[in-house]
Image (cartoon, rainbow, N blue to C red; front, side):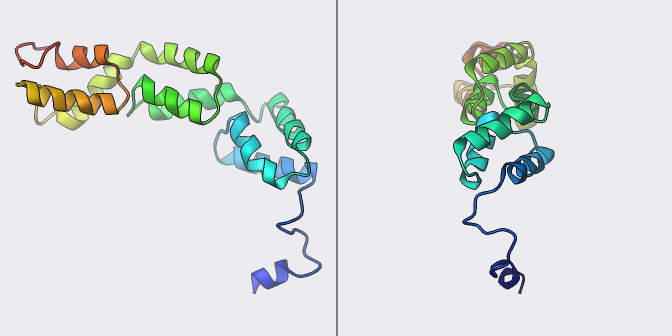
Length: 171
């Protein structure tokens, strides 16, 4: 019933009609009210709804000027959310996929590097606390693969697990 009313000839909105600049801005604000978006993400979401690409860019520029959209704020929120379970490599990969600039990614990684070993240890502890430190090469490799799959670097992995798979080193 709802779809019939909306698809009628006097419907206020049609899927084929592009949105006005005002409606486009309202849509963008609605999106930003739910979570942070990068400039590239907003461009991708709003482009199919706009009359011209210039309209979308103008709306995004206006939102950035007014403080509604910020790639820096997105990067901080994204790294804060992901860093509890992931290492710097995966955080950087996720940010690249979202369209964050390389300079902003480098700055975020610099901030994360100070806590990388502590975060890796917490991730390891959550998974392997019952099992304990690796006591042979096979368990060391398994635990190292787990940490590597979470985006932690080899140096951090060696610090968390010990430098060899012999199990003789304790932290």
